[in-house]
Amino acid sequence: MAFFSQLNLQESLQTLSVLHWIPFCVSVGCAVVILLFYILVFTKFWMLSVLTLAWLAYDWNTHNQGGRRSAWVRKWTIWKYFQNYFPIKLMKTHDLSPKHNYIIANHPHGILSFGVFINFSTEATGFAQIFPGITPSLRTLSWIFWIPILRDYLMSMGIGPVSKWALKYLLTQNGSGNAVVIVVGGAAEALLSKPGVPTIYLKHRKGFVKLALKTGAHLVPCFSFGENEVYNQKVFPEGTWLRFFQKTFQNTFKKILKLNFCTIYGRGFTQESWGILPFNRPITTVVGEPLPIPMIKKPDKKTVDKYHTLYINALHKLFDQYKVQCGFSETQELRVI
Image (tube, rainbow, N blue to C red):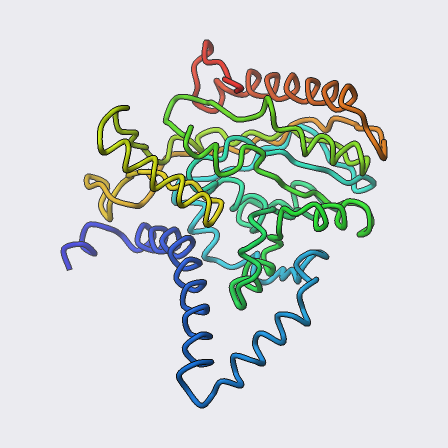
């Protein structure tokens, strides 16, 4: 009772909404896999597992062809509590015409990419009103969509795999007004997440530019200010056994699940304690000006490099223009590696 006495109802609901996201998805994913195996091998109801897997095989292409989006799920009240926990904001700098398709490249990844999730996979910040006629689709790891039930939950929010096939379908075979959202730095960038230090992986990340050229999709720079501020990350000193264990675990985790395990800590269930909850710090996702890209079916390296450089320059411009407004100092620079 002491815990509840320290939090009002709104704060409690906000905390529970954030706890629901990653722990819920992980627990559901693990539970489904274990339950299907158990029913198949150890019970007389094995046909349930067979039918579930048969449906997965029959429905296999759905997540690669736009999924099954639900406006109802995207508007759940829980997402508003999630948004207000930090809070998270979405800022438009230019209109996005429904006559074109877009690749919104978001930076940085942070630890769990809270900003990009709330802004593009829910209507908590009002994406549909801010960008009318545009359908956003956040992209994530493809293997997640091998898990029944979990895949349907993610698809209902417009989330899909980051595979080339799925991306090309939305950008070339699904009409116009589509905006695929890619966190370009990927899970590797999570290891760079540190409060007050905006560092991103981008110099050698050119696949999204090549995809834009092949499909003619406009490139949109996007930066989530504050994403790196919501968790502290502990990196043990080089040469210590703790660092050896940390790196070994991270490398193994990445090989198996293509994820980077970060040693992080935030706040606990009360503001004065520490734990697994992110800090209540604002995240502002600023969507920049679209960069028109010509359609070239087989772009050469020189062309890809040209538009990659133009994109980096546009991202630097966006960061410098809004950094003070979003909490950084005038002298803060964006580090691109």
